[in-house]
Image (cartoon, rainbow, N blue to C red; front, side, top):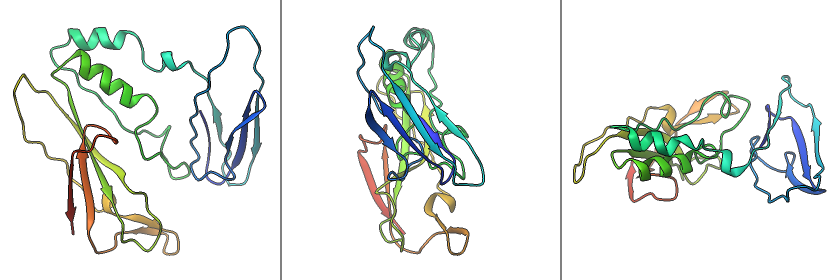
Length: 202
């Protein structure tokens, strides 16, 4: 994983292979997985160019098997109700560091492990798609989520509010957030690639 602030540029090489090129990629936060052999040394080179008014550079290396603590499954299975607090924080979303359009790395896997260990766990995510804005927008963006505990065969009604910010984008010319009138796609599901419900809202 590598990230910078704002317009700063970086290039990350692993074993001579160019993995990230921040100058060509739109997202400041980059995550990639590479299979390495135990024993032989692997050269990692990070090149950084400071272009913005703040200077911040981060890089981390971690085994895929260590993204989620091994105790998670045991704790979830022993709990009466498991609550998954998934989402973003200042470490992966800020004014100068765009977030990804999925949950941060490892959180989808965390939800799946907890859900598998404790059937009383349900996580609902709400995505919004804006296809009529005058600027390019993602197909869908995560705008809200909620957790609920359910017993076997049980159902509950949940409410997730979408405010003005959830339907808006940042207008660079006006230097403010703007929501254009029109139809928005609202998608609901347990994770970004399992959205089983979709509606259009004006």
